[in-house]
Length: 138
Image (cartoon, rainbow, N blue to C red; front, top):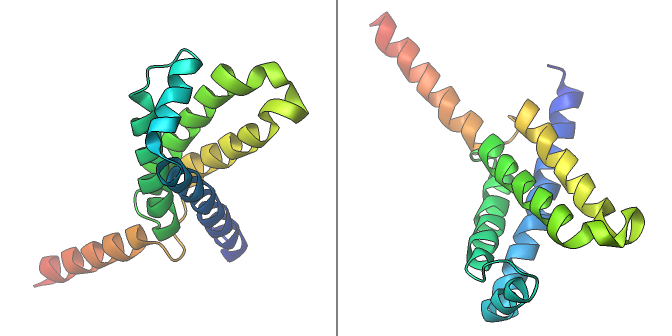
């Protein structure tokens, strides 16, 4: 894979991580109970607010660090599908779900392609591969 593609994947990974980290942190900083109440008011189980907030917060950090990128991106994609169909579809494209759709597509791209450049996964698995090669040659 070309270096340009990896730089692009890195940019997408970090920006998606920052967006979700910010949204997850905002849910806790604004009082998670407010988010629970809002979830209840739109017909979703209030407890789901905790799940979404934690996935956004922890998943955002994971994406920024490049730790479990494909898994974190898949979870972000599921959240975006939920947001589109439960909240933003009524608003139409521009006033509703356009931003969520962009985040969904970025998440899908990361699920399909990963992002190795400057990632903890690459560092961890590269070292495991080197250790395995060393042990096999001994």
